[in-house]
Image (tube, rainbow, N blue to C red; front, side, top):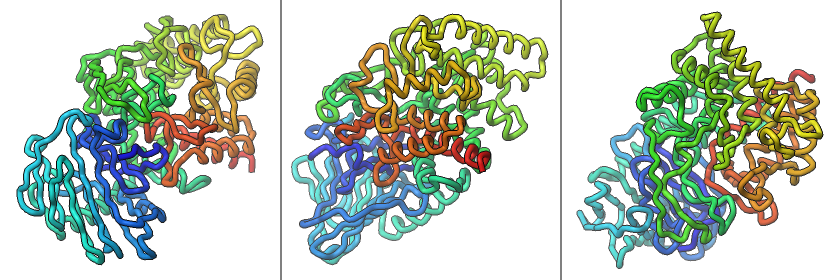
Length: 572
């Protein structure tokens, strides 16, 4: 089984977990039950050991694929000997069972399905037993594979054959009962459930279909039981092919979640997403008895520092392949700040102060800890006085102070914000007048493009203008931008798509609408056919890099489009 290119992948989701499938309708990633559980289908990270689920037919040629409206129900169409084969894939919502369901239209040739299920990311063979001619049970996993046609086990692969002209269906679910009517009911309930989810957030304006694609990606990657939005549903997809920068992103990153929330606040929402974010932050802190936030949490709000290296070859031979993330104990000042900035946007929109005790605790923590070095927005192992961390911390305190009814506390927050600004002025300016990556550095970083969108600086500020000009000179490529890393040569990785969106937002605020649109169009050229973004993009190889799909990028795109719309209206 050949590994798919990241760019060929689409996502099916039940808002508990998801599956990834390519244009051949081969499912190469699936963690049953929850996003962060061990994968049962994992050929995405090891084509020899990992499981897969393919639907094959002689002379099958991909035609197109699309989601039904804004749902997570995907229809893929193929040409087979001049005729058509359609596969409708979905993961049930509002149904009595969960799993993956596949409906296959009649085809002009025999259709063959092959399912190879291997536990623990491809490391543990599974016990498979016939419950009937049409059902195979996985007793340890409490899963059943049902099919309208007879199932056979050949070595470790489950196979079924469908004669030409006959429709079929097949499903891997957590119920021992399934028939055609039950499957149709599940599809109907799933489409209806996604219609309700769609109502939580709406958008009309420039880049409308593209924003809707990004909204789908964000809504697919919500863990429904807690409301947490994971950074990405995958592990070990490399930032550099063949390199070691391969991480597990199946966590709720506080920075990412806050920026996601900030991007959605300005859309037409019913408030559910905003309140779910605040509830998750507050719940995680209480669950772990914290006065501040960790840089990320598990999807249930827990803290895990366990990291396990898996003996797998990785995506395109990129290793190590690790489960878990070693950044759990990092101090990321900008993550704390991003939460307050998101809460400030929510308060301004709603006129209410939900989870105020949590907000106060975070603000007080920033006041007590802003003088510490941190790991920065790029989670470097090298701690420094990162300028972007300090700037967002200062702005966060300024934004929250007006909501503080205790005058003494509000003044203390503003006093600390002033101290941070003075620290930046005295320590974080390069010899040529730009904002430095960190105190004492002569380099700049694209994270400073966030300063204008969050109100730390006006776009016309001299230091910010020098920073943007230097970024253009050193880190721009085809209207897309690289970041600056201390511990790795960022020229060896792809352009960083979230940061490119920040640059688009900055230019919109600066009144350069043409440049903002050009950047957003360049970003969209890096999306795949169903609108998903990876973390990075290799322009030379036209190749997606990093974990996929990356919610950080999707939210940054939405935020930049919002900024473009607002600034375009002002210039009319």
